[in-house]
Image (cartoon, rainbow, N blue to C red):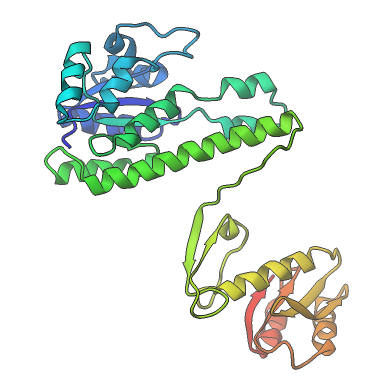
Length: 324
């Protein structure tokens, strides 16, 4: 679907001027809101204010600006559907082919130490998710972008397809958009649930870290979700397996119970030996002395940095993973 008109309304303005300028060079009509429109004007990029597009002013301190039939009609009507096309002409709906939206930073707001409930509520985005959902529902005709990391890929797709985007890209971005809205609402719901101390429900959503070679057994598929890679840096060795990650989780939970220098050896999540001593080498010797056969192919974890001589000693024994 060729991009003739774009609606841009972003909280995170990183890269938005470059995107808008590239769209403008493609002859795209740009509609924008509030602070985003001001930024684009400062960058000398032609832009139509949303109030001009809807013929209705932004009201209620900006709480209502894009919640308008001309916006959602322009997003939702089915291109090529005679009834939709006729109603679009009757009500003056101009098609919006591209929506670039990211949401008020609710999660960042509630992470602040002294945030009030009123502050948090003001950062609940209403118009943004509504536009995202309308655009994503009509992905057969409309491209929706919710992540600045996708700007360049979208521009490349437009350049490669004579000003249009491919259905494959639109579908991919629509899925991403619905997931974004779901995650956003989840954070709001969990926050308000906690504020009211109802604990009626709790939901989580975790990003994919990596797909694993197999699950607990070779015939099973597996993947790792969450922020595992934020806590560990792999220095050497093959890709981690499902069982490696299971053992690392058990090992780090065990070692967290100790304050003084400690070494633990585990296999299949079971502790084979644990030793504590102010001298880390002695801690290792104690742990290893517990069972000198079991450590083969196991996990070794230490709650201190390991120096080179001790690392060489430990590496004399075959182990799947060493964590320090």
